[in-house]
Image 1 (cartoon, protein in one colour):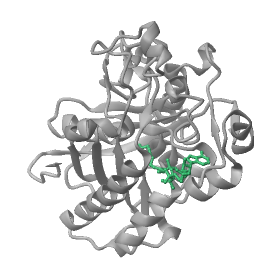
Image 2 (cartoon, rainbow, N blue to C red):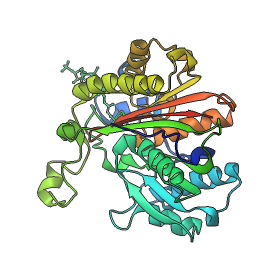
Image 3 (cartoon, protein in one colour):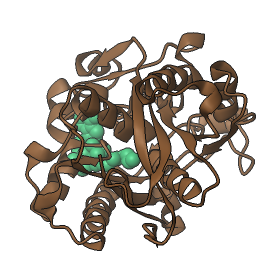
Amino acid sequence: MTPSNSPTTLFASRISGTGSAFPEGRLTNQELAVRVDTSDEWIRERTGISERRIAKPGDPNEFNSSLGYRAALKALEMAGKRPEDIDQILYATCSPDTLVPSTACWLQAKLGAKRAWAVDINAACSGFLYGLSMADTFVRAGQSKTILVVGAEVLSSFVNWEDRTSCILFGDAAGAAIVERTSSDSPQRILSSHLHSDGTLTDLLGMPAGGSRSPVTADTIALKQNFLQMKGREVFKVAVKTLADFAQTAIETNGFKAEDIDWFIPHQANLRIIEAVANRLDFPMEKVLLNVERYGNTSAATVPTMLDEAVRDGRIKPGHLVLLDVFGAGLTYGSILMRW
Ligand SMILES: CC(C)(COP(=O)(O)OP(=O)(O)OC[C@H]1O[C@@H](n2cnc3c(N)ncnc32)[C@H](O)[C@@H]1OP(=O)(O)O)[C@@H](O)C(=O)NCCC(=O)NCCS
């Protein structure tokens, strides 16, 4: 686990703009129940999800980088920045436009962010927090002033739509944040980030084929190995424990108590996971921000889309303490605490 909140540096970082974007197409539980053996009632009860957005296959307006582009433009506008101001683009995704080149480079071209260097980060659902933590580190090191961090997925391309245990969960979306330099004594800043991964748990969630280890062939397609596979029950248990642990670590490291946190934004994988975490932390659900019902699990996009919504509708106000907390395939984990 890597804590990062050194008070000895001159600089700190803060988020000065957020944005989000979703595909137009909605897929309701009722529509899913026509495709696989499930029901609206089962999905709502077990996951809290009612519908999700699904990108139209092949539509250039709904490529991963196109959703990222729309989200990035909104974040830039809120921050009062231009694409030329961006020093770096950190693009968190596990469902890239193409394996090579990176989705970050596709986005860079769309934005015309000529000064930036751009790179993808794959930490699955934890990706946005990994990107945010890296951005914070680059800014505090004095290397960059303005960084665009995107968390975006079109996981619908990688979901096995015949597998009712996984296809009910996922949706497509993009969220973005502009991370800017501020002084280290500024009250509004990222206070800490804690990241960790456990590569011994790779078998719980992943896509067995499609990489160089097992390229896509007629055989792997027949076995559906080029789609997401998941051990849902095991993931559920680890998720509850690690989300609670990382939230607790963030709160304690900064000398706070749970009641000091104004808003908690956990990874939106399943409402039951979130409720179990809140229960462990003795944290009231009224202060937990939720979008899982409307969008499902949008992986790296759940936290930045939720953050953007709550900033824009005024729930998150300057001075609020906001706790972000994630887990994902890898397995990967992390929490970030910031003063908005
Ligand atoms: C996938 C998940 C919703 C399943 O819920 P669950 O309460 O654990 O359900 P179980 O896996 O124990 O299955 C219970 C029963 O429901 C069935 N079932 C599974 N999916 C179903 C569906 N969509 N509709 C109806 N029945 C379903 C199972 O086959 C099982 O039937 P059985 O008892 O006859 O064997 C839940 O485990 C989960 O959300 N896990 C975490 C997944 C996750 O977050 N992944 C992303 C990580 S970033």
